[in-house]
Structures are given as structure tokens and as C-alpha cells.
Length: 315
Image (cartoon, rainbow, N blue to C red):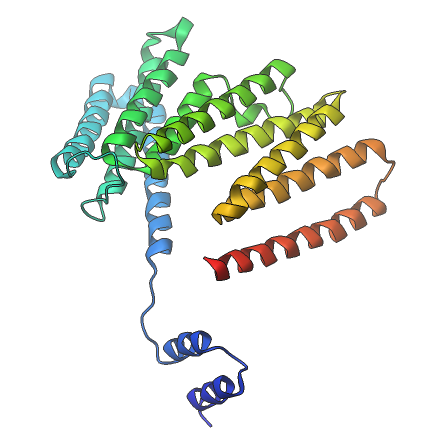
């Protein structure tokens, strides 16, 4: 009996659904399936690898190559990327605008990263704003926001929000060892600011599809700040209550809109925060700690898998 016959029997018995039968038959018959997402990720990773190599080359060989050569190459590459994008971009619209071709988004992303490398080299070499170097971050955020809304690109929006966070003094390298109460308050203020901006722009109809990106960045910054308070502050219970409130808001936003990421944030960050609070109250050590992590971690993982499958079925 062939595999196709067995699949037909399973469908008739109700062992598999018609949709599952069609999918499995397609796989057996070697029908083509989409690799678009995988190729997308590989291309973006390739661009990041190229930029890392470019940055290493500039930092290592700039003395041998000379300042003029480095600046000409970086400026030419940046100008070529922008020229390509401006020459092929459709007319601007406040609504979602599809890319004109497959290469467009990658060229734009490459240009933005080259801009960052060039600014970093200028500051390292000439120290033009040594006392106010954070202005480079603000300028970079401004350029990235302009390119985001002109060319409708979520990846560039993420770069803009990251640059703005860095200008505000926020950095993951300071978590959890160097965060103060003031630092955490700045992080919370930043997250509330960009969340409000995202929702406001959505309601005004200005690239409303960007709202999810704003809220994802805001949620992660907020949760990291609250977790640092639980891990470091003497008044950790206050931060724990704030974390629970944030988890509730994340669930209230994600569940009715079928946005699994916000549900996952509430589950994962809530689990980490509650576990940390419990450890500070208990005397669990060694084997007890491992057993607790194994059991509770398994429950959380199963819960996330269940929710992911449920969201997938109802999408």
C-alpha cells in the first residue's frame, strides 16, 4: 500500500482533516512550498554580516586606507542606496505601501546601516561632538524616522526606535547590573512615549500598520525596566505589582486583537518576575531550585505552545 493510499484511508476514518490530507499529499508529491520567510531572514542576516565586516575593515584598516578613501567609499555606498530607493519608490501615501521590488527593502536597510558606520567613524576620527556625542544618535533617529515613513519599512522603524532609545540613555548592556531607579523611570517614560505615539499615529491614519512595531518595542522596554526593579530594588514588591499590571494590559491588548506576541510577553515576563520575587521570599537552593525551574518552566512552555496553536487555528 502506497503512502497516498494510507493518507486517503486516514482522511476517510477522520484521523486527519481534509486540510492536513491536502498538505501531506503535497509533500509526498513534492509540490513546491514557500521559502520566502527563510530567505528573507537569510538576506537580512547577510546584510548584517556585511555591515559587521565593513565596520571591522574601517576600524582595522582606516589608517592604511586613509581617511579620504574610507569616507568616499562609505558616502558613495550610502548615496547609492538612497538614490536607488528614491528612484524606484512609489509616491508617498499615509496608507501601507508595498515595496516596488524584492531588493528594495534590503537596499534601504543596507543604506541605513552604512549611515551608522559612517557616523561612528566620523565621531571616532574627528570627535566633532565629543562633549555632545549623543546628538549623533538623535540625528540618526531623525534620519531613520524620515526613511521609515517615506519608504514604509518596519525594519528601519525598529532602527529608529532603537536609536531614539540610545539617545535617551537606554541600553541593554546596563541590564541588570547598572540600572538605577532614575534609569528605570526613564525607560518607563520612553516606553509610554512611543506607545502613545504609535497609537496616536494609528488613529490619525498615518501608516497605521506601524502601531504594532511601536507597541512591541514599548512592551519589551517596559517589561525589562520592571524586571530590573524586581531583581535590584529593595522595594521589589512594588515593581512586582507594576509588572502584574503591565502583564494585564498586555493580555488585554493582545487577546481581543489576536496578537500572540503580547500574550507571550505577559506569560514570559510575568513568569520571570514572579519567580524572582518568590526566590527573594523563599530559601530554595540547589536541587529545589532546579526542580522548581523544571516543573514551572515546562508548564509555561506547554501553555505557550497551546496558545500559539490556538491563535494559529483562529487566525
